[in-house]
Image 1: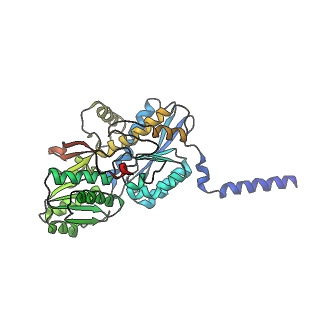
Image 2 (image 1 turned 45 degrees about the horizontal axis):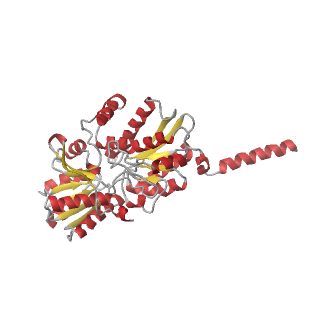
Image 3 (image 1 turned 90 degrees about the vertical axis):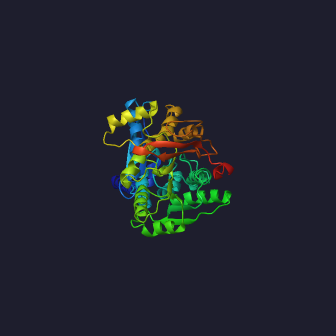
Length: 398
C-alpha cells in the first residue's frame, strides 16, 4: 500500500506540474552564470518588413558584446520573433518568449499596436522592456516601472515638424496623411496641438489602413484640398504607394515624414527614386556618417552580417540596444531584475549613436529631441535643423 500510495503521489505531482499555466515557468530569472536572455519582436515579413532590420541591428551589437567576452562573464543569448506587424502575433510571440524561454528583458519592438498589446503583460510578469521601437504616450503615462522609452514621442516629433513647416517653410495649407492606428493618430495629435498653438488648422486629414494598396481616393482628397505640404505618418510601403499615386495625378506637395521613413536609400529604392526632396525627422546619427562609432559598427556589420544593408533602420536597432548594454554593465556581476531597474533609473546623459538619454525613477521618457533632415542627391542626408526639443512636450508637464 505504501508503494501504491507513493506512486499515486508521484502521478498527482506530475499532473499538477503539467496542469500549471506556462507563466508558472516564467519565474526563471532570465539569466544564469553563462547567459542573459534578451529578445525582440519585429516584422521580418508583411507590410512593414523594411522595419524588420531594427531587430537584426540590435543583434549586431549583442554579437560585438559577446565577441568581447560578454558582460561580467555572461554572453547575451538573443531571440528574434517575426510578428508580421500584427498585434495578435506580437502577443503570441511575447507570451512564448516569456513563458517558454524565460526572457530577462526585451529591447526595441516595432509597432505601436503590438506594443500596446503586450506592455501590461510584460509589466505583470516583471519583464523589463528597454527602448521600444515606437513612441506613444501610452508607453510612459501612467509611469510603467518596467518600461524605459528612448524614442521621441510621435506627438513631440510631429509638433516639431509642424512648427518647422509653418514657420521655416512658410506652408499655408498643411495636410496630414496618417496610418489609422495608434502610431498614425499619435502623430496627428501632435500636429493638431502645434497647429492650435499657431492658431492654424490643418487643411485636410486623411487616414489609410496599414495594408491598403489603392490610395487613389486619399491622394485625390489631399490634392483637392489644395495642400502645399503633407506630413505623412505611415509605414514605408504606404509611403511608396502614396508618392507614386500622387505623381500620377499631378500632385506634388512638399512631403514631410516622421523619422520612421528616414532610411533614405531604402525609401528611394522602394519609391523608384522619388524620395529626393522629402523632409523627415531624425533622431540618430545617419548610417553613412563618417564618425568613429558609426565606422566601427559599419565594419562589424561587414564582418558579421554581410547580407544586411547598413541603413537607418538597422542602426536604429543598435541605438535601442546601447543603453540596455550600458545598464547591464553598470549592474556588475550580481545581476537581478531589481539591480537592472536601479541601473536604468540612474541613466544620465547616456549617448551612443542617438540622442542624450536620461531616465529616473519618475521619468521613463528618455528624450524629446529630433533633428530635421532632407533627402538630397544620391540619398544623402542634408541637415536642415539640429537637435530640437518640443517646448510643448506633454510629458514634461505631467
